[in-house]
Length: 109
Image (cartoon, rainbow, N blue to C red; front, side):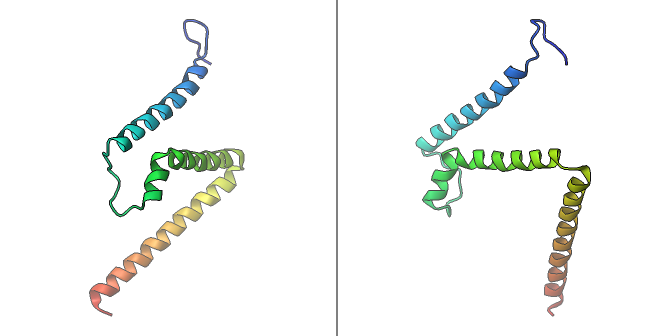
């Protein structure tokens, strides 16, 4: 592990930077929400706007990504590769289905 000049590893600074970035993002979102500078789509309902600006949306997304990352890191490599393979096959299958529908709509069948 690389140490800084003062002998610390810098891990605490990295952890605090994540918290600081999250606080800055929340303050910016609150300022933007209070100033009426809505950049959200007009068709969003009020509860969606409130959920988005409250910070819960981002924390929920971070929580899901953290859970997935932790699961993949703690599982065997074969499980992670199998899940990746399922996503690739599923994406390919969806792409083929969409392409098939487009071709049929162009032909008029």
